[in-house]
Image 1 (spheres, rainbow, N blue to C red):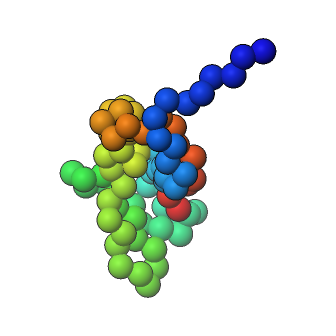
Image 2 (cartoon, helix red, strand yellow):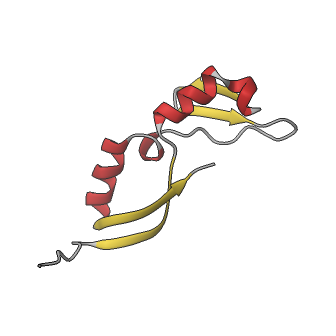
Image 3 (cartoon, rainbow, N blue to C red):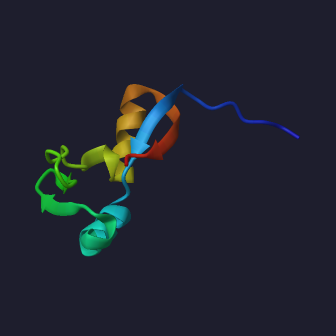
Length: 84
């Protein structure tokens, strides 16, 4: 049995906010207890009593953009966790 060695750096602290999740949070905002606004920069979330978070867009939610960024930076793999 052979084992492949990952090529490039391993990013051990990465976050992801899939567009499908953000759209579901927007559609069911009341159930999630959050306000979601779609902006040019991505989906901006506002929790009650808190300032609006920066928009989740780009490589945070777009896997093609993330893959391109990873290649440009020499990152071979990531350990990812949910953004929220």
